[in-house]
Image (cartoon, rainbow, N blue to C red; front, side, top):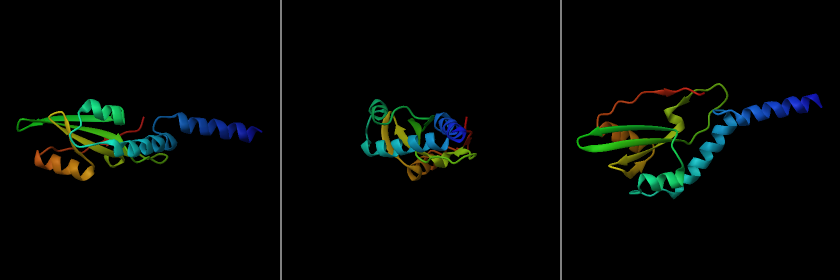
Length: 124
């Protein structure tokens, strides 16, 4: 009986903690599924309706173009692993409209506008 109680408590901790493998796995799976509803040219409001709020955002202005990157968790993390940019799928907005998404598109945009990004996101 005590083993069951301890096991249930541990499971509740894993599920309830932000950044836990179970929690990030659920969030990542939901985000991957939601991305199927995206279309080029959508407004930011349309994207929020499909995806919800992003975990992280970045914004830049280069050559008269406003560029925003919204990053959504699409890969869960394991126990004691740091969350890095590779766990996220970026959505790229140019002048308020969805221009594309995915790591390759993100890299292309940051190179085109000479934007340097190198960060690791710490789990809470």
